[in-house]
Length: 539
Image (tube, rainbow, N blue to C red; front, side, top):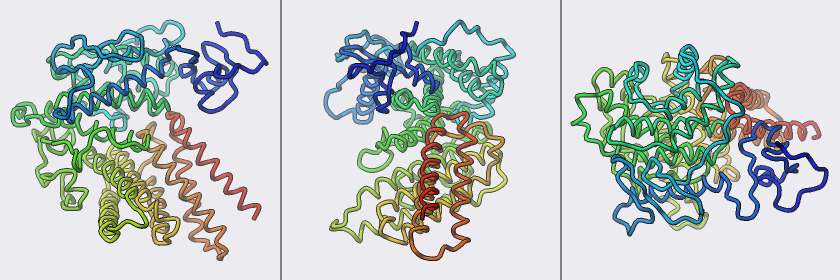
């Protein structure tokens, strides 16, 4: 039972972790305080007093273990390993590592001794779904699968062409329940989240390749789920688990020739690797951190597999692109290739969009006012700026694709616009040309929303919350600049900016019901807009 509320202030350090992070008043009720219950986040309410080991601390420890594992997989010849490892494609065996946590560890899907971390079980008993409910959950999931990181072949998945995997199926049911319009199915969400995480915690990989494959798929679905529900620590953990799995399984160095007899199976592994690349880039953007593994530069991963194709292409027997595609990511980022005539592949486009965003942040961070190689830098800056613009132009010209394809194009176009904004961020405050370019691409990002009927869209990739927030903040700043410039306002320009901002806010609002992360960023944008309106009315 929850302890009774007290009007007396809590002792220092006695508030729950979420309230302490927000510096908010906490009533100290257990198992969940009033604020966490009011925010519908009772599972996040944790108390850490003294040497108590919390779920968050265990997750942080596991994340550190996974990051160490990934570094060792990428650099196998650099020194002695910091954790005991084994081939994840063999039957998993116990592996231990000294830890500052005095709790038993369980062998995780990457061969690392991970601390067992379980979610709080849902209140009451939730019966297994009926066959009819399963059908409805899977249908809802498949209708949104392209925005959830689903890389398995849909036809093979529907007919049960993969070995049974409780973690994967519960992750599918989890998303189906979350996006369902039926209250009975939505009530199953907490139960399937608990079952999926428990199944992954007990996953043991065998030599069956599809066991690895479906586990990677489950990790990605859970990473996106926790991102969407604004539980970033848990999401980051599952993202890193997927990165470690594809790297340890060497999906980037598959012998495609040996898999020519099963192009669909080869395609699933190719798409698994590139999907993890895409989600890793998205998490890097969300957390303002470098990607987990590099595809360019001195530490780049040697990728021996082709760019990903569409599921339809693999079903037709293709494994590699028919036209072009014989280049690496670094060639693309240098603008050394012409990919305008390549076969349409939403996943390949997504990977390129994420790479452009990551490169834009890197190039922007390298600028120094007194840098000795200024001209060289400006040449690199201009080349990347032009590449982003051409890339966005190519995407904007694509028409008459399927609903799923148009949703993915919207995400990629928004990524490209946000990349341009990030690239110009260091110059926009004092270079009018950079500021004008940033405003122009923000308006273009808002215009891209018209390409998709959001009334039919239950969900978009969680990264859209960050991207739209970045664009919305820039538009608010442009309204402030226009009103404070002292120059007569041009009605056309003012209308363009305000309508673009309204379009961004409306889009975020329409998707916030299925994404708490979107709702969080929406509140920030709305507050900024309200502050700006108040200032404008006072001037």
